[in-house]
Image (cartoon, rainbow, N blue to C red; front, side):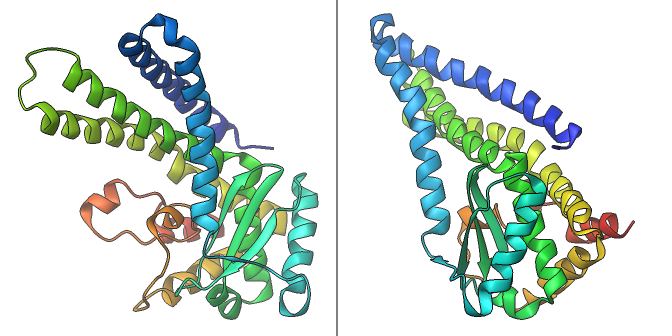
Length: 274
């Protein structure tokens, strides 16, 4: 069952995103006219869908489908068992060289994908790897990956809407395209902050779900320790789109910390062992 706190956050953020989406639709009707409502509606429906499909493809384009035999057979078995316990369809398993030990989930419940790095498989013991897989399956079960993807899509559309309103909404707009571009970025940042209200909390929920389904928080805590140490002084090949989805995302600068997609690893480990 999805965490109540996560449900509340997703409902509140989802409602606010829906209101912003209506704003985008209103801007479209204002510029194209009310008679163009079928076109505006079509764009509102298809853009997030295409963005979702594109986002899933972008996140998994470097990965290869994980064979069910040989060294990966046990990962398939543990994933199938955990999926059954969580009441979800077993996701597609993929493997990718990421330069660092990591893993992420994408897609939606019933059509999910879990990507595990080759470095992670080599680094972790079986129970630790099971904790990581359980964490990723929890994201699919809780549907929070879908919310993140839709939120990103709406953020882009709100940015475009703000830009057009400023640049073409009146005759005397000082700064023109440059100010419109700045306002567009600012609007997208506000939506990003809104989505971040879910992003960090969902990691704690997925950690707790994994703890419940594997029977202990210690294996995942040990996995996070190993992943954190294993990522030190190693060059990651993970792109920005994948990093936000990964179980471990190391932000270093002040701005990166403010917009961090993940809570501090130390706090996650502490909660898992408390």
